[in-house]
Length: 367
Image (cartoon, rainbow, N blue to C red; front, side, top):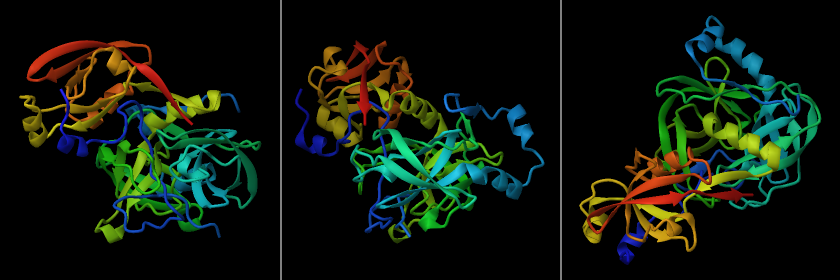
């Protein structure tokens, strides 16, 4: 069936195909936008794997008894300032010769996939070294920079933090290097729409009240052990009525993307090939469906995985690979766990009837 123009107007305008990405700012100014990237502030062993931890009780016990100042002192050399011609951002030492940052920090033009070739990296000891951007991913707003000097990497958590957990945001807000702010994890799974400077929405973010400012982008959101739980991404400016609303890309998302960028210069994402919006009572009434949850397929990419599997415009997706899909974030969260090429069952409500379809998930890259 054709979906109505009124329903289409409510649609999310990014394909529910992959990890979606990031905000960007123009020199750190918000221009009154609802959300603003932490962005850039005005300019004033190499092949080994990363250090990771699941933050088990044993892992947490390692840092018991260590003060926050001691932890900050230990991690400070591993959080750097990234300078380009358009401004400053932050970065995290991921491996001895690789720095992880946000794509919009090194983008030639915010919201676009093209990145600068070289950057300047300022270290905590006051020295500056050159860096080369070796890979970036617009869909997750992440990028990797390679440097010749060996730097001390931080440990990245492969488990999500818990709401209420104390966290520290470290970076270079407005060019003030090695700045640290403290807060808690306010919530998980937050989504921000595409906005100023960013081409696609941000999904499954960590929300924190640790103050984040322009220039913090690409810096570390740390737990009290000094482990990275997220990469600082965006904030909602005070003029919007917000008080300490910041966001970070979880380390569980950043680690596999960073590994792909180092190995291949780009990242592969699972791809479904649909545009969707959350089902609301108004949309359900317009569609004539009795479904009470799910996402409405607003568009199907011609020849894409969804189209080949029989998904149609107007279908309400209620489950993917055996997992309930209540909303857009659920669909993306489950999709990112599926390897491209995997055949999965997709349950849809079509005109009040239930259908189970078999769809082979595709892949998608983002420069």
